Every structure is written in C-alpha cells, then in structure tokens.
Length: 351
Ligand code: SF4
Image 1 (cartoon, rainbow, N blue to C red):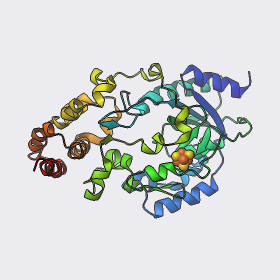
Image 2 (image 1 turned 45 degrees about the vertical axis):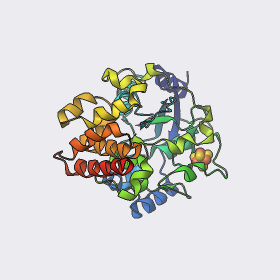
Image 3 (image 1 turned 90 degrees about the horizontal axis):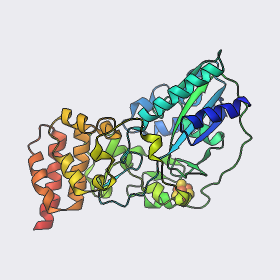
Image 4 (image 1 turned 90 degrees about the vertical axis):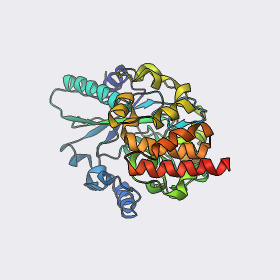
C-alpha cells in the first residue's frame, strides 16, 4: 500500500467521505486577495481573521517543516423545507467542530503510529489555514462564486478539516471538477447583496455572519431581508446547480456526540414551537443546557433570541406577540430592542 492509499484508508476508517492531499506550499495569489478582503473590512467583527494573515497561506508558519496537507470532508446535506430556517450544517446535528476534532485526533494518532518521525497538527475551520484553496488545489472541488468549495460528490454541502504534516506525500495528479461559468444564481438570490462579482463576500451583509458571528444590533434595513433564517443561511447553496446532485447525509457519521433529543427532530426545529421555546429561554444557563454540544451555542442566548425576534417580526404570527412583549422587559438591551421592533411589526399587521 502506498503512503497515499494508506492515508485515504485511515481517513475513511474515521468516517470521512472525502480525503485528498495537497502540497504544503505558500499561496501567493490567495494571500493578495485575502489582504485586500481584510482591507475592505469584509471580515466584519471577526477580528481573529485579521490576526497574523501570513499564516493563512503559509503552512510552514503553522508547522515548521510542513510538507503536506491532508484534507477531509463530511457531507451534511438534508432536505429542509421549513417555516423557521436553520442552516443545514446546524440542523439536528451536534457541533461539527466537536465531531471533527474527535475524528481528526484519531486520524492524527494513527498517522503518527504509521509514520513515527513525523509531526502533524489538525484543524477544523477555526484554524489559521485557508483550507478551501488547498482543498481546490488537491482536486477536492473548485471554489464557486459563493466562495464555497464545490465538490463533485456532494456539491458544496460539506464541512472541511485538515491535518498539516511534515510527512512528504506526493498528491494525486490535479483533476478539474467544473466551474461556475457564466452562472450567477447565488449572487442574484442573496437578499442582502453580500456576494460580490469577484468571488468576494462582504460578511457585514451576510445572513450567516449576522445571525451567528455578529453580536450587535442587526441593522434595521437588513431585518426584513433576513426573512425566517433563524441561524445561518443556505440560500447561495440552495440555488447552485452543482448542488442538484446533493445526497442526504449519513447521521451515523455525526452521532459520536449526543444532543438534547428535541434538537434531533427536524420537524420541531422548523416549527413555531421551536421559535417559542427560544423566545422563552430566561437565562444563559438554560440556554447552554438546552443547546449543549450544538452549533447554536455560538450565537449565545442574546444573539439567538435577537434572531428569533427578527424571524417573529417577519412571520407576523399573532401567537408570538405575548412572547415578544415579555422580552421587552429582558435585562439585555439587545433583546429588548429587537423584541420592540418585532412587536411593532406584528402590531402593524393587526391594525
Ligand atoms: Fe457558481 Fe452558480 Fe453555484 Fe454561484 S450558484 S457557486 S455562480 S455555479
């Protein structure tokens, strides 16, 4: 067995559905584009992205002597025609970082057992490396105008992780998987205009960023555009023609970590009852306990209730009014303000 096929086998043993290897070289063009993106402040308040940007495109700065990057992916697609919308990577699943960490740790352990004198470091997407260009270089897919990696097997419905290693591997010959061509569906569907023509995403306008990463008051002019996206947004993926070959994910690959049973019920997650449950969470402790081990924790109680108020204001369902009115007395100014906005939206319909 060659070192490459052994690594492919070890990754598959961990349940990873895609595995590829890239040479750990510097990415010159991507570095320039990334610095320009930071200069435009398109990273919003994700300040960690501007820390030590040279690391993002130079694996040697993360692991001196790095020779190769092993890239792995898991499909997360599931059909989701719900009233209350949650990004599919978060829907009825534990936090993929935790799932990946367990699998990558095990893969790294096996790797160092087989190749004893090597060093290796694994990361999920919070790591310093820009993993998508390396995944594209390794022929795992291509980067679309929606800035996501689009794979032949699962479209863009994949989460990525990687192991940077000093092991010198010879990658497979490069293979071209496709391109966007003249398509611009994702740019056209984005309600806030976050996607720009030149493969550029302005995070300040992105619904995923606003509902997950951003901790402040959502600009009033964007609230209606958010519609019923409670946590994240998949619009630029839903319209992508390359995603017509999406295959349902395999829950077995995600079950290492347990979550609250209600949160595994996709019908519940798309329902008004779920929205009411969120609007009723009174304390940070209750929030942490209800959403333990899930990606929702990232938004924190204030962020998720803020989002729920916007969804409620856009749904205009009168049964939500008592929940919103109660939140006007919340101790968080952020929640109070969004609850007040939502109440006014609902009352304007009633009058
Ligand atoms: Fe590319 Fe069209 Fe898919 Fe956007 S929707 S990523 S432009 S193929």
